[in-house]
Length: 47
Image (cartoon, rainbow, N blue to C red; front, side, top):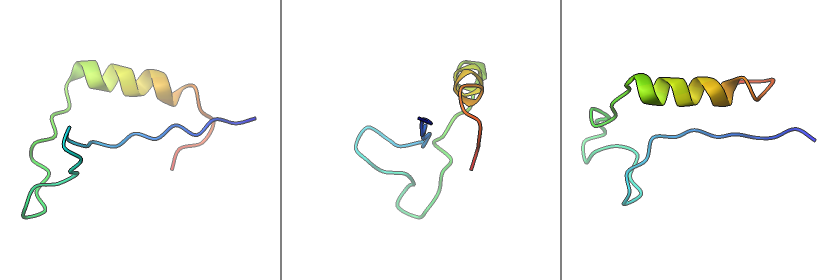
């Protein structure tokens, strides 16, 4: 059976964007890049 792995930037209080739709609070650094890379190789399809 295949796995579905979902990644989404979300704040601890459940918001995806700021009050005006901004997403400038999302910071992508080497640590998150490495983590996502490891998860991507576990799947066979990306959407």
